[in-house]
Image (cartoon, rainbow, N blue to C red; front, side, top):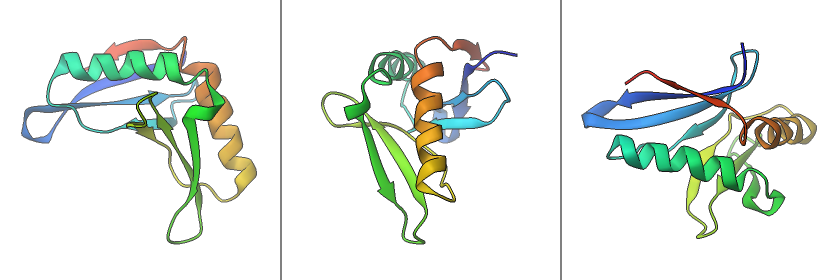
Length: 110
């Protein structure tokens, strides 16, 4: 299995996608989109923006757990990671998105 984007329907006739690593773990979850074409544009935005370290915003949750956001050039959030147990684990997650985001295939479940 290779890294892939999983595009699927969401509530209220919307769409979302997850970027999954080779092991099937979700490494980036999208916001919801009002149309399939907008979700596909979101995937293309991840492909482009995941190459730029400055697009990753490193954050800490209210429970003191590290996570990250991937943002587009206009500062809009494209996707969010899970929470991690350490800053080092968060950095590994970012590296995985950088590696897999540009080349992952599409699995369209719509």
